[in-house]
Length: 286
Ligand SMILES: Nc1ncnc2c1ncn2[C@@H]1O[C@H](COP(=O)(O)OP(=O)(O)O)[C@@H](O)[C@H]1O
Ligand SMILES: [Mg+2]
Image (cartoon, rainbow, N blue to C red; front, side, top):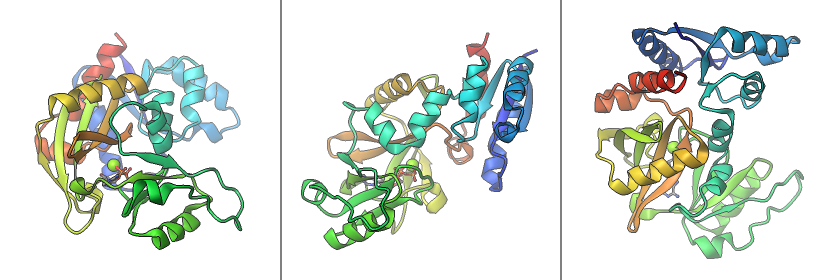
């Protein structure tokens, strides 16, 4: 019997965060594996290496639902197969790294703010305003639920935002006006599109469900499927949720979530996402 660890952040609180590991565990067990949900806190332990070694010995693989960047590196060094892999999680977590890794694929034009570590510095904005026009989107490189995504409607707002964010990694992006308040979320497993919904928001350009966006089933276009395969292969993803903006020229990759929540999309589409993922995990470690 395959033994699968499901590693979760030790500080989980949201119902949605607890639902995810339970659903995957349930589906793994329905397929005859043994799933154990564990808090991903071993890396603070003085005997970290011994713990990692023990976990790798006890389990055939681990579903990594946390975003801690260090533990997966330690686990992989001990031979553990992680879903998703450490590299994939890192590339997705940082929106600038994702953008760089996907260079050449259709994405909104994007500039990265230079690293700033001086509290009294005046942010260097270069030609961002002139090249992207207004309004433009400002995003922190690390963020989710639309909470770290902002709109600057003019140069004054751009300056104020870059002043506020200057000590944190962030980027400036072309605003895709025709997609305002609307995007497409595509869940991919093993490079294949398995569930898809359109998300629409009222009175906000961000369509995240967590901000009140409403999801409805959507049939992904061939182009979205092709892009999804390319994204998964470049980022070495087993599982992800890709957000597509709908531009006049076609779908643009907005961001890629290695740790995408699937509760909402399972409800909206009726697709058993956790079951599909469990099957992928078990067949990958055969
Ligand atoms: N360049 C953009 N143009 C128009 N809307 C955008 C753009 N970037 C993001 N959005 C909207 O904001 C939402 C959140 O942005 P996203 O990059 O997915 O960050 P998060 O990780 O917080 O979900 C997207 O789902 C989309 O609705
Ligand atoms: Mg998103």
